[in-house]
Length: 117
Figure 1 (cartoon, helix red, strand yellow):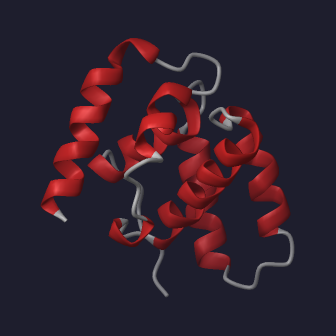
Figure 2 (spheres, helix red, strand yellow):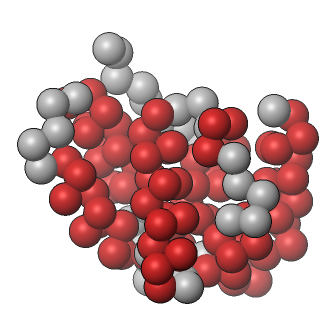
Figure 3 (cartoon, one colour):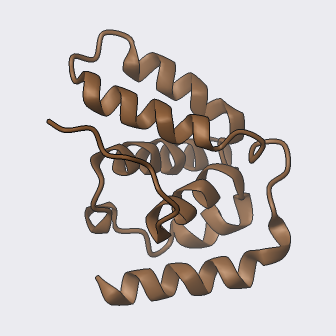
């Protein structure tokens, strides 16, 4: 399997919001369909976010790293492990300063994404 280079795609922006923004995750979880996410490493992270939200009622933020460490330990798919790591590394700074003020724009972006799938 070939490694996939991270970019600033709509999926990436949506996933970053799932990780860091509780208000967005709360609303997105109502309509979320993981099968619409094209990249397997993004699907993995979104599953973690939804599970964390179901358990704790908030976005995982930096605690997504705990899910990663547990999942990556012993995982044989090195390419997917590295793709997830690259994505999480790209979120540096997002955990400390989630942007709650752009919630309407984030939800519009999610709606456009879902309508095109």
